[in-house]
Image (cartoon, rainbow, N blue to C red; front, side):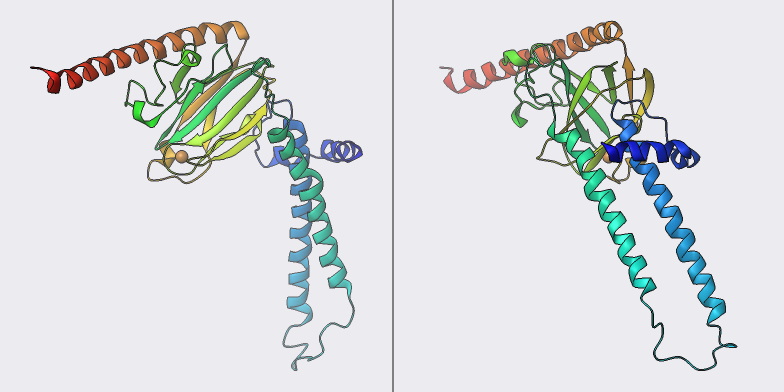
Length: 288
Ligand SMILES: [Cu+2]
């Protein structure tokens, strides 16, 4: 806690993040991340100036005209060693004292309860976009299987017979969030490794096929921004544009209702098509 206060005092003094064009924060935990980053930026600036000055100093100090013959003993004091150790210590403090605990809060304190008042989302990367799967009001994602996948109708392979999927919605490259509501995103991928980054939410997670990486955050500002793919994932990477917005519960509910109905009607026609195909398949060989 004292660390946080110390950093707050330091970062309010002069904000290097802003100077370097970092996007404004719009999430509850973002301030802590920004303080840490600001501290890192200051530290790196000091290192940069320090090393550069030392480099210039040695160029002049040990120029050939002043030292025609090399000194085989070199430096005899231990100042450089002490500085090196100091740098390592500060870096260890940043990593172990700030970065890891902050990351831990995002991935260890996830509202797990199905009844928890949190928006539950899965973000699935593919070449080249994001499918966003909402669990709906029951907080449960519908069961999925690769055998149910059908492009355009059932992109995520939802089981049409699973009750848990009745209030789910699947949308493409457009994510809506609710203001001040805890949001849990489970990130994965259908093909290669993508990176799910919401800069304004100070959230970033690699999307790896075959795994689901959950994390949570709380949006505290309304707005319209971009979901960035943070891994070079193929030739269409730069075009992997997706948007997200934070809105009031009322606006969200309205939007969600229409998306859920669209998903469910697609799922219904998919289910009917499947049943028809199954009937034809089983009828053919049995026909007398
Ligand atoms: Cu990508």
